[in-house]
Amino acid sequence: MHRRTLSDQESRGPSPSQDRSGTGGPCRLRTRRARSRRGCQPGVAQAAKTVTIASRFLLAQERGRLQADPTVQLDLSHRHVSIRDMEDRAAFIDVATEHLPSNLAGQWISLLRPALTLEASAKGKIAGQLGGEPLLPVDAPWPSWPGHGPLTFIAGLDCAMLRGTDLELPDSGSLLFFYFDGQVDGDQAFVNGRLPETSAAAQVLYLDQDAKVESRSHPEGLQPYSRVPLHARTVWSAPDEDSPALADTFDLDDPETARQLADDAFVDALAPWDKPLHQVGGYPAETQGAPEYEVGVGRHPELDSESPAFIEVSREWQLLLQISEDDEAEMHWGDTGTLYWFIRAEDLRLRRFDRAAFTWQSG
Image (cartoon, rainbow, N blue to C red):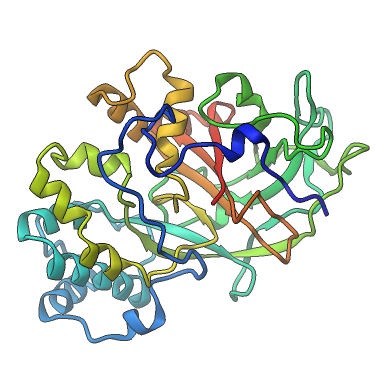
């Protein structure tokens, strides 16, 4: 199976010390990747701890669909909320209230988002698949990157099974994700969200439930990844240190605020909370800084990457799908890399998945 490798330019890609545009300026908050990304929920030991009285109260209230905390403006009426979901969220609340001042803790807690982790080992109905062969409309051409070649099928998702995220996804139909993984050119092309000219190297197709489809084999020269059925489960996600959500919510020019949010004790308390490998919605698990900024540079090159306007437009990009390395599917992206697809709320509402943006990062 082909392993996506790094070109010389990609291997020199944005380091943790580079700015949002990858041009070498300092970040507002340093990136610490001590976190393991294996797993699909806050660490078992962490989640099993007895929560504080305050968190128990919030948990009990949210189970009753009541709004106990005025700083949390999350409407849960559209999703099924399990006790496990709320216990995970309560653990996040505990860490924030223990390590941050009350005013910062309330703001940070309000940023928590529900997401779906996609797992091969979970029980339940199948929500999609990694790899294999896709079902394409009978009259549709195979997705390709003009001037370079056909894309490889990465994943397919059943929209009817994607309940419990912060995204307003279609109630039916399916989403297909394709990526130019270097099989046809020996990894010569440099694909990155910062480069507008590579936007067609990753594509998303939305198929209506009534679409007439057929199983399609990959074009000659492309070897499909191994098919792995996926099951979806709701989890809670929090922004990483470089997330535009933090820059948009907090005054990071204030040294004390920046210090508290990047404090080792707070960051290390979050470290055991393993990130999902594959995820729909929520916050991305970054590897080399916030991927939203990479997309922002590629889609808004006219903006200064340190300006408030740039932070604002970068935050508009919501995580649609994150696919990390997967041994079962034989997917490997550089050195423990991750693929990210993002979409804006307006494009999602209009079902304009052709406007989705892509980037990828490697450790």
